[in-house]
Image 1: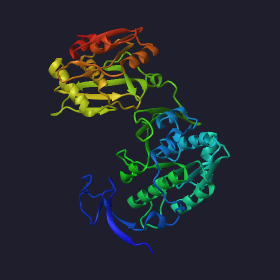
Image 2: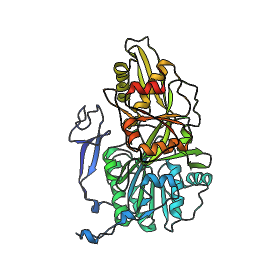
Image 3: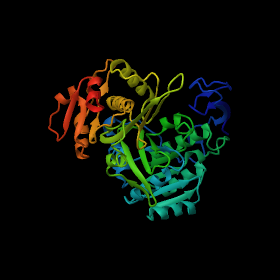
Image 4: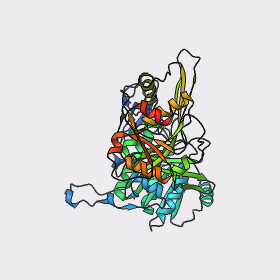
Length: 456
């Protein structure tokens, strides 16, 4: 009989403690330690685990490169984020807000994976088979290679998967699955960690690609311990602004590909559809007659995107003026405001500053510095940027405009979208290897950029 031990685990980071304390020693959060009961039996002694042959040492040169064997799910944007397709025997965690489209995109991906000849098992712990069938009918998913199962017991899930021997296993969601070896409730730290580890272990031994759906907290992190992200090979986040039909799929961890790629989708009645022209989507509702708005050519992975940076500066009646940001780093905006005040003569000490990136996308690269500074200065001076103008460049603390990577990709995207003028760093303009049908305004200081973009 397996021995049981009681310990306390943090619901935020998964740190274990032999006794309850008010403050988690791992992440520093207060009142996050909850009682967990864990089994001390080994994985081979636990019920429901198939009996795999014992592992043995093999030469590195004898190991097959299974990571190169990828299967397309038929959704180009999904395959792009995955690194070119689904790797055999990999474990993927998909997180996102409720109703964002996690189950929808996985059901659509199951359709493409089933067409490669291997079965797909979709296990739902929140819906019955009939409810999943209703959503599948709405999405037009009618493939015979997709099997449905409504179950929450990890032992029964593993037994059914071993019997069916599918190519892909989808578990929606990991918070609903529990093991009878642990007395904790489904969704608790111990249960989530144990069930995810068993599924990942089974997938790697049986050659099954495993997809796990994870709930997110109000802070936007996947619920449960952070150790869950270390168990799987790939972690994907599905993001989108409320009220907007657009969804962005991001990889924050990928052992088999880049973590900088994004996929753009639009939610429609028939399901999620790929957006072939993300730049046009983000600029579709842009008004060129408003001060404090301009276009920034961003780079997400290997994809250039034109996004609209918006700023609103208004007189503050507070002792400490507000600085509010959406879609851009707060500290970066504070830094640009200080540079504008000190190096460009833009007095913002008594002004509220609001900065937003339209479309729900988030930009983190330093190349957005010049666009942020020009947008804030344009709103403060109430100057409209001429239509067809794009801006990019990094701004140093001395006000100098520094070169940024992949300048030619940014210029190509701007030219493709019909832009006529681009403000860019002088060092980038000097190193261009091709000519572009654009008016290139090279600048070396933020004050010079403001005179070119927002006017004196």
